[in-house]
Each structure stands twice: as C-alpha cells, then as structure tokens.
Length: 489
Image (tube, rainbow, N blue to C red):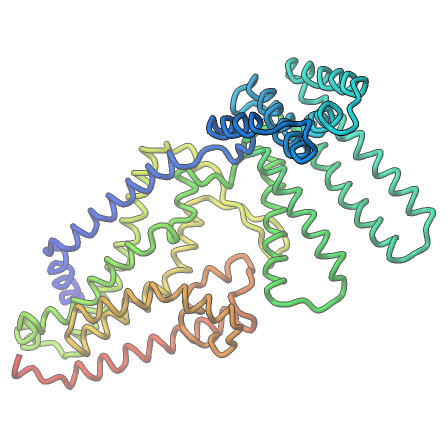
C-alpha cells in the first residue's frame, strides 16, 4: 500500500498543474495582503469632510436668502454645518478635537445661527453663545480632552440622580420600568466615560475609541433585550443575536482592560484568523483539481491498464489513490498557511502574532484566549469535514464517470452553492434542511459552545450526517471501480 501511495504522490508532483495552482495561490495571497494593508484606514473618520462637500455648502448658501422665510430653516442648517467644518479645519484630520466639535459644539452653533438668522433674532443670546463657544475652543486648543469627559460624566451622574428621585416618587409600574431602563443606560454611559478617564483614552479614531463605542452599543442592546423580553420565549435567531452581543461586549471589554487590538484585520494575525473565509476557495480549487483527475486521467490516457496489471487488487489501487488525495488535502492546507505567514510577515511584520485570539466560550461562560497558530489549527479541524467531502465528491465523480471536467465542475459548484443553500434554509426556516450536508459540514459553528446554524442541530448529529454522506459517495465508488470494464479503454 505504501508503495502505491508513494507512486501516486510522485505522479502528482511531476505534474506542472499543481505548481501552477500553488503559484496562483501565492500571487493571490500577495495581492490580498497588499489590499488589506492599504485599504483599511482608521476605524472612523466621520468628520473628515471633502473639499467637494465644502464647495457644495458654499454654493448652496450663496443661493439662499436667510431673510426669506422659505429659505431661513435650510440656510441655518447649512450654515451650521459650514461653521462646524470651519472650526474643525483648525485641527489635523485625525485630531480628537474634530470629534468633540462634531458632538459637542454643533448644538451651540445651531442655536447661535438660529438667533442670528431666524425669525426671533437676539443679539444678546448670540453674544452669550459666542462666549460659550470661545470657552470650548480654548479647551480644545489647550488639548484638554479630559474637561469634556468630566463635563459629560457630571451630566450623566446628575441625570442618574434625577431619575432616582423620579423613581422614588412614582408607583406606576410601567413608568418605574422605563425609569429603571434609563438609569441602567446612563450607568453604562457612566462606565464608558470612566473607562475613558482611567485608561487615558482621548477622543479619536483609534481601536480604543472603537472598543468604547462597541462596548457601549453591545451593553445597551443586551440591556434592551433583557428588559424588553424578560421571561418571554424568544426565537432561535434572537438567541443567536443575543450570544453575538455577549461575545462583542466581552471581547471589547478585553480590549479596553488590556489595551490590545485583538480585532485588527489588516495584520498578519488578523488575516490568519479569517484565513478560510479569505482563501478557502483557492484551497478547494487545488484539492478538487487533484481529486477530480487522479482516477479519470488514468482512463483518459489509457494508463489504467498498466496500473491494473500490477499485483494489487483494484480496491487497494483505488484506496491508495484516495489516501493520496487526502494527503494532498493536508499538504495544500499546510503550504497555503505557511505561504500566508511568509507573505503576511513580509508585508505587515510578524509582531501581530503575539496578539491572542479572543473568543467568548459559552460552555464555560468566560472569555477564552489562545495563540493564533492554535486557533488556525482548530479552524482547520473544523473546516476539514467540508474539504474532505468536496474532495471525496470530486474523487467519486472522477472514478464513476471518468470525466475530469464533470468531477471538478460539480464539486466547485457544490462549494459555491453552499452559502446560498444555507441562507435559503435559514431564511425560510426549512427544518428538514438540517439533515442536508452543507449545513453540517462546517464544524466551526460549534466552536466555543456557539449555537449552530439551525435549531436542533448538534455536533454529534453533524458528524453522523457527514459520515453518512461520505459513505454514500465512497462505497458506490469502490463497487463501480471494481466492476468497471477496461477492455475497450
């Protein structure tokens, strides 16, 4: 058997096609890594207005007459935006001051322009607001970002006190429930502001600001979910969304506590973490090409006669070819991962490999961290059922129909249709589809105690279904090959 496998491997590695395919994968890896490096900028840049937009505002303002009642409201809105951009232009594109101007000063600017151009003009109010704006600008120029955080924190604490007073003076259950919700939301806002102060996180566009925003969002959505649903029965989709919110909240809390960007995608670690989503198709193509030709080529070239006259049974010969196909599966995956490590390391550097992969484990209800290579290994094990089944499909078709093009095409179509089939099954809640292979062959859905694609699916049931489909393909393949007539080949 080992001699047969060795001969099959020699034949495969003598073909130019496998090297061409690997070169294509390498070139695609280089292209994608370069795209990742230069296509992802800061997390946010909400206030970086383009020159074209500024020109648009100036042109529109020139057309309007604030003294005309029909133009007044539009003029105030556009003038407020233009004024805000004017204040922002004093600072660098990524300066924290731009964010504060957008969130804090806009209300002052809008109010000033209302008293300046509106129907109820008030010069005294305009002068008063200008003083307040000047005080804010002074803080901005002094780089005193903590002033704005502390101001917001004081306002939030005051709001909580006011809500607590209201709560103590009412007995209406609905009002009490709403007050509890508002207090909880403000406590989340307070926690986020305290994070900003304690961790010295300036306003801005970096990963820590993104983490603050995402943590706040996930916490409030979880709160809304808990308070709105209570003990009610919820849908399976809602349970999946709820789990996702828990994971988001805990992951971003980890980022804030440890000040490490575990979610960075444009890095070697980030690409490896999403390796199969980014490059899975190319791995499948190489594997299917080998599996779809390893038997049919012998028939097409007539070399099958030379193969079958050797002192081995047909079963051993076909088994050797199948084992060789599985070895090529492992070889292709390992080579593709190693190429990504090399290419990604050259383009991004290897520093990100020290950043852990972080996931929430629903089995232990705790955050779990692991080395990136351990995670890629885990993902590889989870993806293997799909890869093996697709390789087996190509191998079976290649053997039964001795047609390489048919074998490769159908296997690739199966891979590409996988996502569509799954989405339709989930969208229309087709319960019987949980017994179909495409919903079961990706075991990554079960990692860290995650909920599977459809309710009622389990890891054990998915393993059984994959084994059944494997046997359905492989058993007829061996039977047909044993009985195949090769006299006219």
